[in-house]
Length: 447
Image 1 (tube, rainbow, N blue to C red):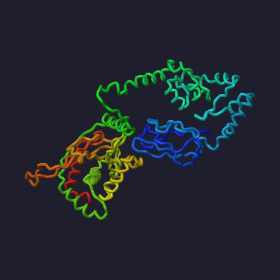
Image 2 (image 1 turned 135 degrees about the vertical axis):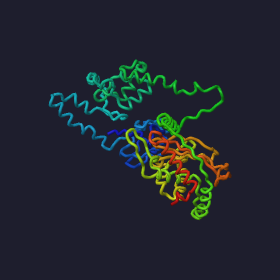
Image 3 (image 1 turned 45 degrees about the vertical axis):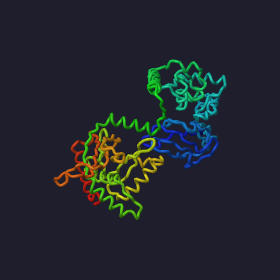
Image 4 (image 1 turned 120 degrees about the horizontal axis):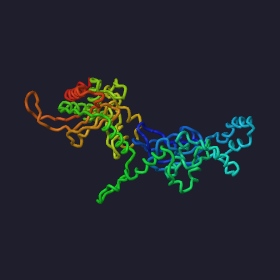
């Protein structure tokens, strides 16, 4: 039995990936749990394990191939019961005998199997092949041509019109051999049926629409191919700005007490080799504020509003290929030392693309800190399906009213972006007020 090994979805947002490296070769025997390949997703490079046992019959997708769609066949595996496949079809031979048609059916049962698709291939017997073709007229269900996934992919690559082919597979299904045997002039044949026409019409202008060189000015430049991560960031943030109505609320936060507490805590934690960053305290403050104002710790769905009982904070981390958001779970109840230790570990593995899917998905809200770059204030884009994200700017010395007198204080601007479908402006303002209070009186977040 031929088993199709398909491109897996290794993360919730993965639609395609890069087959970075094969860890097996054709002829190798694999069993469940064996590592077969390294696959680069939109977020990380992960190892793909076998779930079936057998012998690697053919590697369909070459090592280093980009843009492999989830569900595409990447390998063919010969299962251990390969030789018993015809026996399982034995009952099918009895029914034809009852109809006094024994001989033609035997040839169909014993037909060779296409190693690419695992489908029976009609024998090249001139006496039997015409008969097989005569039964293939009803191969389409409505306007949809019946073809194997591999045949469809090869046809799309070679520009072959499937509706112009006669299938040799079961019930007239088109298989790989039919596409490869198609005359060259069929690649230019007009598609039959409204569905095929619309598909080709959509496909035809695509190269021109996405062909960047035509729009590039005649200026010295270099071109960098988009990574899977960059493509996903572009798609998700475009969807967020198009589909999520953002509302922005900004507060100025005095940091003097928080910075003093941080210094004292770091002195006491030095023996444990833990050093808190300002961002660690921002994570904690946002998490506690979300629990205090649960109306902002939410997720919007078309029919429901989900309110979370704890705060898991997604933290924006910059990597060479783009942003990724590892999650600090239960940040509202976690100690500052735990948040700091976990954040350092997650950030390091994020830059090495070694995060597991559960480590960068599922947060209830996000935080993005650009203070280290000297950015005073900015508006962040919400990370769907979350309901809000906090943008943290740099702390700087500013004129500030202290005890009814003008003085100098370390002040930071923080902006919350809220999904207005789920969070009203007054609720967002309440969260920003709670966040400001926790930062200005930081002992409250430790209680």
